[in-house]
Image (tube, rainbow, N blue to C red):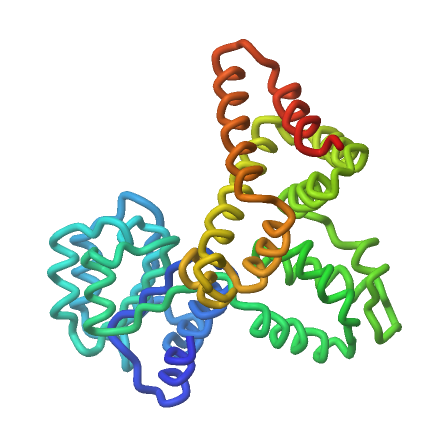
Amino acid sequence: MRRIDEDISSGQFQNIYLLYGEEDYLKLQYKNKLLKALVNEGDNMNFTKYEDNGINVGQVIDQAETMPFFAEHRVILIENSGFGKKMPEDLGNYLANIPDFTIFIFVEPSADKRGKLYKAAKAAGRDIEMNMPNESVLAKWVGGQLNAAGKQMKRDAWSQFLNMTHDSMDNMATELDKLVSYVGDRNQITLEDVNAICIARVETKIFDMLNAISAKDLKKTLDLYQDMLSAKEPPMRILTMIVRQFRQMKVIKELSAYGNNAGTIASKVGMPDFAVRRTMQLANNFSAKEITNLLNDAADFEEQFKTGRLDEKLAVELIIMKYAGK
């Protein structure tokens, strides 16, 4: 991302920009930064946008070959095309010989590093993966938003805010706006404010449930489960998310046992460092055998549900009773 900022600052642009990854907020921000720097407002003659499947590749190439009209660049934006995974051969070949005046901006959910688009961006442009940043970057970003609004957030409030909203920066931005409005003229955002206003995602509730299981707090675990059912969360989705969390715990616990720190593990498993630390703390409350046993039981109960031998709500309750019971 720093390289894009440097290109914009210097005015020296690449022919291809590939923005990919899970963090939509960052992709949107940097797409808009590039467009603002490259395209004059209202200039529809030198800017073309294509999105989704079914893009006419011949038309794209024709546009790319057309000289810009009273402008330095012709800009072609292609979004969510699937080209990150599979690029049409003719367009892939064309990207190796783009005219100097044409700039492609690709915005994709993912990119195969063996694919033609990624290789073209690597050779003639910028390939920027945009995933959830680490905690220190998020803290600076949120701090900047708070400073602009004339607010501060207490440390315990920040920790809870991060726990409740960390699934995406879009969600963090939305919840932060709500908090700023909620506190009104007050300068300080407290833990009580975060708990009162921010909406806990299902992932956060699952994590709270697993903490309750590790503490052998059966009542709290069942209460959290009932809260999710009341919010219309399907029991099988809840079980799937429990299994996902335990699989992460298993991998992180194994990597930690080999002496890897949170930062190294984060890079290996593709998770933010703060999420790894949180998962490591939870994993320490379970033995490797308990984690393996729960995963085996969950797979067995899921199979029983799929074959009609077990109700899905009961399947989750059996897991809870077995592992949260004293």
